[in-house]
Image (cartoon, rainbow, N blue to C red; front, side, top):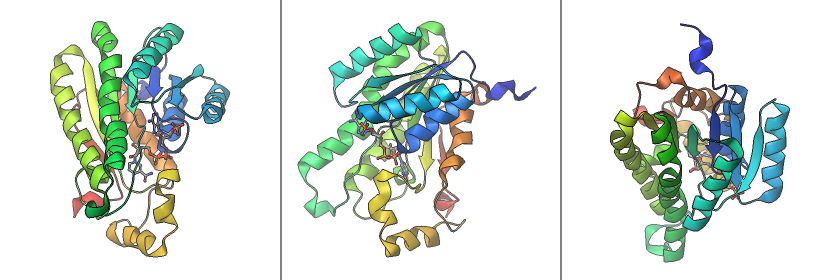
Length: 254
Ligand SMILES: NC(=O)c1ccc[n+]([C@@H]2O[C@H](COP(=O)([O-])OP(=O)(O)OC[C@H]3O[C@@H](n4cnc5c(N)ncnc54)[C@H](OP(=O)(O)O)[C@@H]3O)[C@@H](O)[C@H]2O)c1
């Protein structure tokens, strides 16, 4: 067996929240493995920036405005992606937000924003994209979870609840679509430097807590996510479904 089991030539991937951060890393790594990319997010200048970067890698790419909390927009955007590319073989549910305050101070509207983006948004996307995967008898869904899907930390009420939900959602989807060729897995990253965690990166005490808590003694480097995304999107992982694969320097093992 050769390295072609990791190849994504002639595949199309839709990555939500690929305008920056881990979604941008996921989109670029899938493109490096040969996939064409539907870049999705709300920020139009970043949509263009990432689309241009992927075209520079020699792949077909197009930017699509998308708010994953808006069901009508989800359905219309998926239709536009299908019109442009013909199919979607890989869905990366990645768009995510956070709001960090103690439980007793947690505003209801922030709870709704975090849950609607990180949890409901994943379900809406899967519901819109997966039927054509089932029709083709093959597809890969990758849900971006977090170590916070399985561990608790203070000030992470809605975020940890959403990620625990993502892990469970991954199992339910995996079981329902297992015999129809659609594999559903999640990635559970530890802390990686993106806009989402600037507040923590800039707080020396919390930054060090993360280093101390991690067996490997540090945060993740963005390129360290690439192999896992390619693996879960490629035929190399075809007999794996319903799993959360932690990319966490060992955080969740103790
Ligand atoms: N960074 C970490 O340490 C870390 C660790 C574990 C898990 N994660 C997970 O990784 C994913 C990406 O996080 P990140 O660190 O890359 O965050 P980020 O840099 O803040 O990027 C978040 C992305 O989500 C998009 N987004 C947010 N709300 C959206 C909405 N309603 N509709 C569509 N797109 C939306 C943003 O795009 P627009 O603003 O253009 O819409 C952006 O592309 C999240 O699910 C997060 O929970 C991150």
